[in-house]
Each structure stands twice: as C-alpha cells, then as structure tokens.
Image: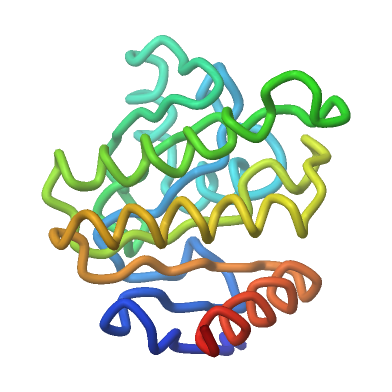
Length: 182
C-alpha cells in the first residue's frame, strides 16, 4: 500500500510516499548504491532485482562511483525510465564529512536528473539503512538540499521522497508539515 502526502510549498513539487521505490513510474529513481554499483542489500538490491540483469551489465561498464557522486543508467524492467546511482556515506559519528557527502548525493543526483532531462525523480532514504546515518539528521539534509535546489531550478517538476519504512515516513511527514507552516 502506498500512502501519499503532497507538500504544498514550492508549487507542489515535493511529494512524500510510503512505499516501494521500484514501483514508481517516474523519469528517474535514485539508487542508494555501494561504490561498486554492482548491487547489494536494501534499496540497492531491490532496484537491481526489479530492473533485471541488464542493469548489472550496464553498471559493470561504468566502473563504480565514489561517495557523494552520481551515475546514470537506464531503468530496464523498472517502471522508471532511468536509475541515478549515488553512494551515500557510511556514518562514523558525524566527524568525517558525512553531512557534506550526504548533501552531495542529493545535489549530484538532482543535477544528473537535469542534465538528462528528467522531470520527475524519486529518492529513497540514502545512507539510513546499513550505512547507519541517523534518520532524523539525514531527512533534514535531504529536505534542505531538495528544497534549495528546487528554489533555484525550475526544470524538475516533481521530487518524491519514497520512504520504505514507517520511521522515515513519519520523520519526513513531520518535517514537511512543519515546513509548510513557515
């Protein structure tokens, strides 16, 4: 079941969904990938499974991706046309540039979407799973980067935060509602 919440600020360009990112019909979904881009656990594994083996073939030809950067592939068997792979930071207490690296994931993914003429993009909760980034702090970074980018750039029509787990969904809902009051 997918629950939706439309954020009324920024001309309704931010949406919150509680569900499975691999089911979204958007121009691009973002994969919270590892540096090899060859699949893994969590959202990365789910995207690779849903997209099929041709995604893995294309990712092999890319040669990996450093933390904070983004790479672009086709979506293959996904409803999304494309996948933007970004590597979030592993959280080591917040004293190793993790916040800037996480912010860079969002910025670089959004820039990659613009370069490739994607009008709709969906993000998972980057680095909040096995990489251990505190969910509340990560949601603030994600929302801040997206809000700033959309304020400066009108080419993206819709950014979706797709939360698979209830805790992330609740954090984003609270933040979006609070921001709408300002």
